[in-house]
Each structure stands twice: as structure tokens, then as C-alpha cells.
Length: 142
Image 1 (cartoon, one colour):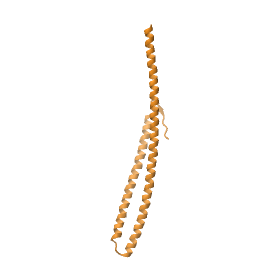
Image 2 (cartoon, one colour):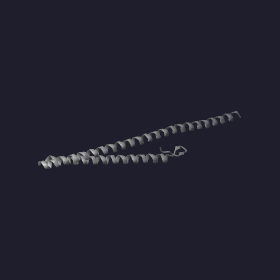
Image 3 (tube, one colour):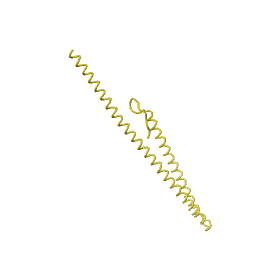
Image 4 (cartoon, one colour):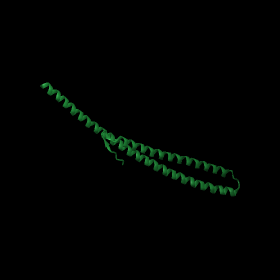
């Protein structure tokens, strides 16, 4: 969990902003990777369709047999790529969710700290206002 230095108004805003920026960059990189894997998967599906069309065009038994083997190999490879992409996508989504949860917890802690800070400032100001009013009463009595 990221730790931030405290400053006069709570946590150091630059550190918090840098952390949020870094988290966004990591998420964007993971998202871009997922998109590129989707494109690769789409390309492989296109190639598979191409091989299916080639297999359908062949009329000789030997060629059909070789086409069937090629199709089966392509199917296995496509299944492996799809399974790998699903595993990677799940990991990326899980990592992003964990990071989002961490960020949300941190944001909630910052909100709580802000409330406490506001209460303390308000109490200090009320004390000062009471002191000012007490000074007015002292002057009136003289």
C-alpha cells in the first residue's frame, strides 16, 4: 500500500496525484495490451476462416486430408491462443479491480482525514471567536 507524507492540509497532494497518475498509466497499458490481444485474436480467426475456405475448395482426397490436418492444427492453436488471451484478460481485469479498490480505500481515507481536519480547524476558529468575544466583554466592563 502506498504511503504518503503529510503536509499542512493533509497528505502531500503532489504525491497523491503522482500515485493516481501512475495507477492510470498502468491501467491504460494493461487496457492497450488487452486491445492488442483482441486484434491478434481477430486476425487469427480471420486466418482460420481463410483456411476453412481453402479446405472447402479442395476436391482431391489427399489434399482434403491435409486440409483437415491443417484445420485441426489451426483449431488447436486458435483454442490455445484464445485460452491464453482469456487468462491474460482475467489477470488484467483482476489486477485493475484490485488497484481500483486500493485507490478507492485510499480516497476514502483521504475523505475521512479531510473531515477530521475540517472539524479541528472549525474548533480552533470557534475557540478564537470565543476569545475575541471575551475580549469585547472585558472592554465593556471597564
